Image 1: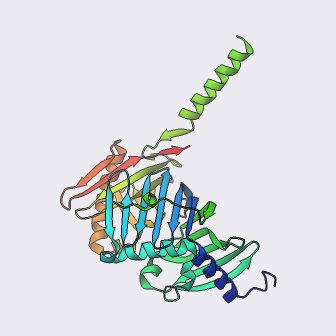
Image 2: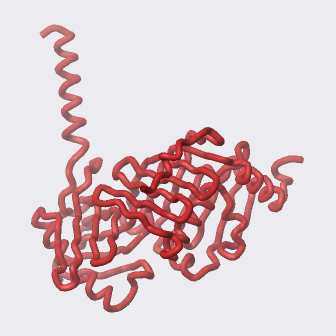
Image 3: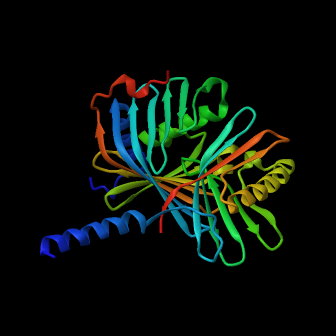
Length: 190
Length: 140
């Protein structure tokens, strides 16, 4: 069967299978914010770590230092000024942010039928999933979320966030390593 | 001067140019085309907002965008020096209430006055909000 002939259901199945088999993932990322009004862009770089079981570390290294760690029900936010630990069960906004970040990175959000209307297509060497937010709070923030999957690894390679004001944020995941051990210290929120 | 010394001097000059010429501390944009970037930290009584603010002088006004570290926009605004007024163009839904917009416009105007003077901190004493805008190094 050729890739072109793959149905949306088959692609979903492959992505879901890869996501469930992925115990860990770590990579570098480059985030480019395109500002429509200013005709400008801002590039930030960092490192990401994921471990199955609700653990994610998203760390900006340059041009600012900022770390977001999700460890089960707790989130640590660390910047140059302070550290804050938040219980996601007591903070609905953070619960949603954490869930969407996690699910986007591993591609699980394709299964979030209550949250997004999804269309998947094959473009060259990648699968492109276009997610239209269905919920009010998400609609207020994003027009669309576009996930670009590397077909060989069946993992997300690029995340595009399109905002209502015309701004666009593109996050490229680079040098992806799957299923390599990651120290628990990486996800420590204490 | 030996060829080695000439090359060494040139290399030092280039290094100096790169370290001082291409990178500069942001200053408030005052002429057309000038831009400035700030690391933003806004402390509220029970929470805080952090991120980045970019300003651009387009000849008649200063346009500004404020967004968090993940790149999500908080607000776009315009400062009109002639009228000394701030207009909010888009504001994140959470902040989009008439009384917040009113206060934001006032606070942003006062903050801009501070930034124009070379400062980086403005405190809204009435509502206990501290605005800290630290210049970020930017590529010219």
